[in-house]
Length: 287
Image (cartoon, rainbow, N blue to C red):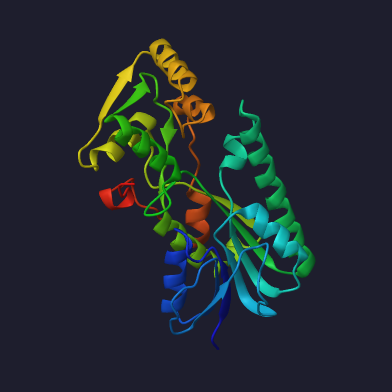
């Protein structure tokens, strides 16, 4: 019997590799996009966003959410759709930004936690099996908002400056590995009712992550490290003169923090096996 899936965020960095795996495995897929998309065998596109959704199927075997968790959780709670499995993406920011100095970041962490609770309570009430996937810093074509900010700043001046103590550990995760994780989790009984952190396959210092990213660009911007106090002065001057855009204070503070998560539960539940950090130039096309 052919199984049917409903996929939100199907044209995004995570949604596209998930879509490819579902179709290759013989699923029939109903997918959401804000813009028209080309038809394909086994694939039906619906156009619209959460504020203006078209009529969707009454029942599917699985729902996948590859976009904003808060919007999806509100829609799911208000919908009447039947689905045995729900696999949704959140973020480890629900933990890493919970005590951030920036009010906006704390508010984001709160929204993510609230959305997670709404997702699980709604699924339990309907007898559905929910799974929440919480990636760390995502990279890959079209998904490098964090690294993309760094690249944009470095290209603008030909140099990127870091404090000498920017050694907080990171685990960047490729979007394709996240698509594979969602595809594997939907059929894993031990993933039902659980939330999993999804870090990348390598732990590296923030400075090394930036160095590898800049090295794939042509021409490659220079990476400079300066003492922490001098960096703070330069940063304040850049903000005051309006020369620094796209790098919020919270992001700078976290350069020194370890943001590391354990992939063992996901590995045990559905064979999660992410790749090491491998950026390439195609991920950062010139503006």
